[in-house]
Image (cartoon, rainbow, N blue to C red):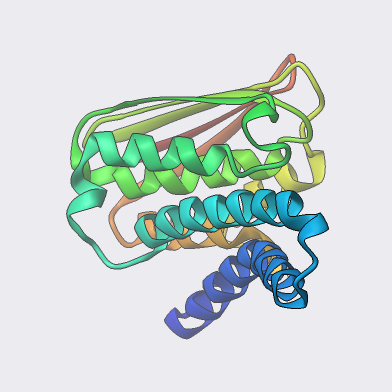
Length: 208
């Protein structure tokens, strides 16, 4: 089945809400502690506010560029790279999560696809990995290498999405579903390959 525009909007909205709600709740709890006036927790409150606001800021910028309307930032290689790097640091244990990202970008046509691919690959990581993405106007090559096992269930589900079979729990796979719908409308094709040593490759190529 193909997702319709309204369903795509619902899927993306649900995923974004899910990825922001935890830190929004943390900020709310910190504000409640401030209102109670117990200064014994002031250092903890400052730490919560700093970390949570940083995560919210980084994720909102990433989601705005990956899922939002076109703007000047999505055509700026430096901004795409920087905001994707900031997003990576919000995952798991933050800067110490063992995830690295290298982006070699050329040709603005696939910058949004590059960001969506970052999100897709990150979702398959269980503990640490190296992501490398390169693209020009006609193709994108993405590689994920990890010393630890990747999520076999998510990898299998993502492969089915490229074949236009969408799971029931669509919101988890919002980036993959949105990417699949985008490339179909633009004459691109996605290929996915697993390799030895906990490696996953995704390719997007212009079929015209």
